[in-house]
Length: 400
Image 1 (tube, rainbow, N blue to C red):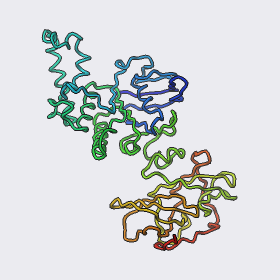
Image 2 (image 1 turned 180 degrees about the vertical axis):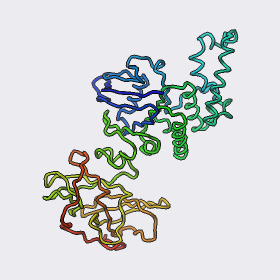
Image 3 (image 1 turned 90 degrees about the horizontal axis):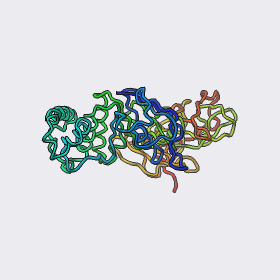
Image 4 (image 1 turned 30 degrees about the horizontal axis):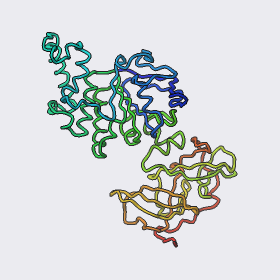
C-alpha cells in the first residue's frame, strides 16, 4: 500500500482550466473521497492519478516515487470504473484472472492455439486460480466463478470488478463513481460492503462520487471540490459541523441546510428576520450575512425561547412523512423565506397553513459573510433581544 501526494496539480484542455493548483496528501491506508457537483474536476483528478490524463502542471507522487511520466500500467494501482468494464464473453473467473494472466504470461502463451504448448503456462495457471479463488471467497463470489456477466446482478458485477482489482494487490485503489448504476437499495448495501472491504484490506482508497451520502458514510476524510479547486478537506464530521463556506454547507447534509438572510446590528449582534440572535460578530454594522441552520437543528417551539435561542414565525406549507420523522416545508418571516425542518413524528405536529414558532438555537447557526466564507462568532450579546418575537401559538391558523 502507498500514500498518494499531489502538489500544485493543474490540468487544462486548450484554454479551459479544469484543475487549478490542487494540493492534496492522501495517507497510506486512508479512504479519501473526492466529492462535488458534476463538472467540478473530481473525475479528471482521479484519472490523473491513474495516468489516464496528462498533467499540465505540478507533481504527482505514489509512495516516494514521482510518477508524472510513468505509464498507467507501471504505477501499480487499480481503477474501478462506473461501467464495471467486464468482458461479456469471459466467465467471472476469467475476468478476475485477466490482470494476472497479462502480467505473468508472454503474449504467445495467451494465444489459444499456442498456449497448450507452454509448460510454463501449466505451472502459472494453477497459482492464478488459487489467488482468484481466495479473492472470490472474500467477496462471496466463489459460487459464481463459472458465470458470465450477463448472468449476474448489478451488485455482483460490481464485486467482480472489485475482485479483478484486488487480485493484483495494487498499492492503491481508485474508484470513479462505482455505485451510480445501482438502484437505491443496492447502493446502500454496497456502501457497507466497500467500507468493510477497506477495513479488511487496510488499503489506500481514493473514491469519486457526487453523492454526499456515500462520502459521509464511508470516508476517513472528504475533499470537497468545486470549479477545479478543493474547498475543504477534513473528516465527515468536520465538513458537516464546521463547513468552511456556503458551498460546502449547501452540499453536505440531507435535506440541505437552510440559508437565511441576516445582517449585523450596530453593536455587532446578528439579526435574523429583524430579531436578535444571541451571537455577535466582528463585522461592520449593516453588513449582510447568511445564517445557515440544519433542518434537524430546528424545532417547533412549545414555550418561550431561552436566552440561547430565538423563535421565528412561520407557516407550514407541506410535510413529508418519513415514518419516525417528518420533513416540514415552511415559509418564515414577512417575506415567506422557504425553511425546511426535520422533526420527530408526533400527535402535536401542525397541519397545512397553520402558524408555528420555529426555535433556532445559537449553537445551531453557521454564519457566513457576503463572500460566502465562514465567520466565527465572538459570543452572545450582553443585552436581551431588542425586538422579542411574539411567537404564535402552535396550531394557530394563518389567514390565506
